[in-house]
Image (tube, rainbow over all chains, first blue to last red; front, side, top):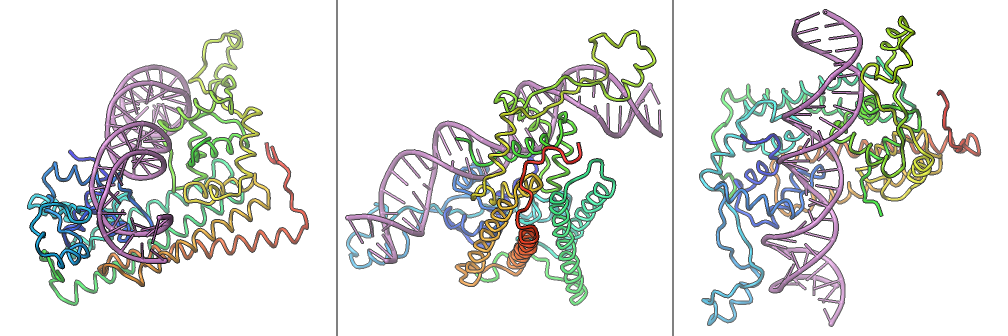
Length: 213
Length: 213
DNA sequence: GTTAGCATGTAAGGAGTTACATGATTTT
DNA sequence: AAAATCATGTAACTCCTTACATGCTAAC
């Protein structure tokens, strides 16, 4: 029984499903994709990768020397056979069969875990690998979750148990506004998804392992 | 040399400066004031209060029995003197002189620590206890911080090292939009603060311990 | 009379950070 | 030759949560 978060696991499996990567590059992509909201450090990533290897979800392939080192080597063909590491070694990770399976299971989950704050952004970022039905359910679940929050929020403001000062109120007001905008954003996305679904009566929901190597 | 976060410390000192409170009530106020962004649990709050007592920033005053228990007791005046706890005991906390001093120091800080993500919301929520000059500097600092982030963000999108898919891009786009709105919000606040400053050549920057006991 | 809310606390653990350690390669 | 960037990893620590333990009081 795994615990709730596992954001990193999902993100790593999702990125490695697009193409094998080494840790350093993986981190950059991670922080690019999850843009600005999250930024994982190496101290988080490397141990996590280790764990995924241990659990058999990913595996390492021997590192190819970086292109420039290879180029430099090309001039001295007599020594290329030596097993001496050229440049800094790079440990490249890729999904195992188990990892692919695990990723499909995670991406198929359209339950609460998918739309809570912790996970929603990762799940959304991986919508390109998620089937249309699941996308729609996750978006709707997220929307419901946010409107519930808005309601609780508004209620606590209109029935104030203790008065808040001017600035504290303004902070709440702005927070509310931002959540309202997320709801609006979701509305747009939901109708786009619905439009797609009706345009082609059956949207492509195959596993697309490679669309552009 | 204290470390960077200390959000809880600041929030607790700020709230207790308005009025003494017991832990349970304090937590509710905390989560009301910092509305929806943060929600501290008891497992965080109580040990933190303990620490503040140890450091001499707050102190406990003996708990008054809850109003209803007092009312019930009023019918049997013969026993009110007994030190037996009436109702569940409530440990009420209030600032010490050291705590007030510490709070003033924290609230006077208009450096980077005040406008980073971690701290900005708490500092803003306590603007009612912050002098006008500091408010302005913190708002401006925050604005600069966000525009820096926007620039880095836009650059990484326009010079893409690796292509992001449709959904990952949309996530980034929306995140950018939300940050832009925060900048716009800050602009409004900043001009309001400037308006205030010129309206009354010297804004009230005394410590207001009680405006409404 | 039982559920919900008030009230205080502790123990174990999860998730992530910073700082450190190491070293190659590229750029200035 | 120095600085930046690439690249991998570990150790210590922080902050916070969940789950537990306890018990009173109000409302249904």
